[in-house]
Length: 166
Length: 205
Image 1 (cartoon, rainbow over the protein chains, first blue to last red):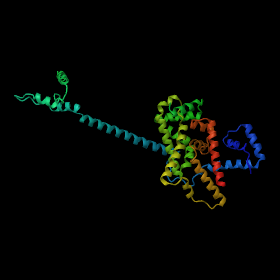
Image 2 (cartoon, each protein chain N blue to C red; image 1 turned 135 degrees about the vertical axis):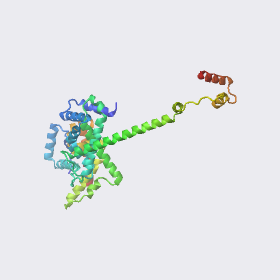
Image 3 (cartoon, each protein chain N blue to C red; image 1 turned 90 degrees about the horizontal axis):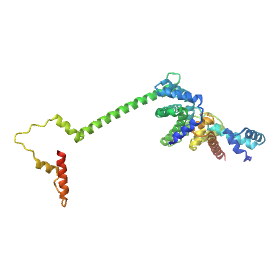
Image 4 (cartoon, each protein chain N blue to C red; image 1 turned 90 degrees about the vertical axis):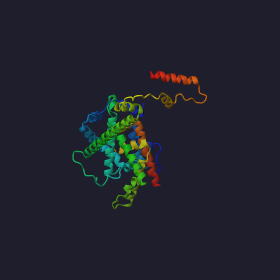
């Protein structure tokens, strides 16, 4: 049987509640007279019926919890469990961050050195001891000139070191 | 402006908030203030719709219950994260929840397929079938194919169709949930049904 092309879109719009009262009357009048469109209309409704989910035959294996709503109680219990886990994870992360911060502070020489000085006060100077100034300069390496280096620049560097020491 | 903010603004633009939405918003506020009753009541108010939505993607009632609970947990997580924005309007709890349920179900079905290398509908095939005639068996086969096709529909069509036939929402509510217009929801529904009907007609040939 041949369906009517001008009516078919209306059949779909009807299941989508998208027809005006006038269109509904028009479709109803047409269906009363047209077997092919009646059949198509029934098939569209049948598709919708078949698309619906079917209830599961078996009961849930999980034992129901006490309370007026199993779903509410079970979900709340899961929520609280998650919150506890989350709080623990945050506490662990905070602890790990604190340990990492403490470790990095301990390893930073600029911060570590004064602490060592405080814990180990310098020994009194031995009699006749003199500071090894030349050795200190050598260790600093500031006076070692690269081949072809500018002497004036080296002097400026030395001057700035002296200034900083004052 | 983020797309979610746009959608939220659109939801508020619908004007008067229905009583049910106001009640949800009040319960969500109670929950944010640490009241477990607000949590439980929100679950009770919406569990039927959520279960109806996720059953489509579940192998059995246990899986459906688990999916429904996960949908609620995600929705409450969203409520908690968005609490600072609640001053801009009521928390559209149901819209968030149902949108989460539809897409969580879809993701679950996808993951199950990935692990089992078999469609979710296989579980239905494995279910014992009572002694029925050939016509009934054929119809049941057709129904399985159509339900499988529903899962494979384009996202918006699937969302609209399942919110309509599983959760049995009016189109105005579907539009609210999806942050679209009622007319657009009807168009998507129309397209989805047409696609399924074409599939059925193809099977009949």
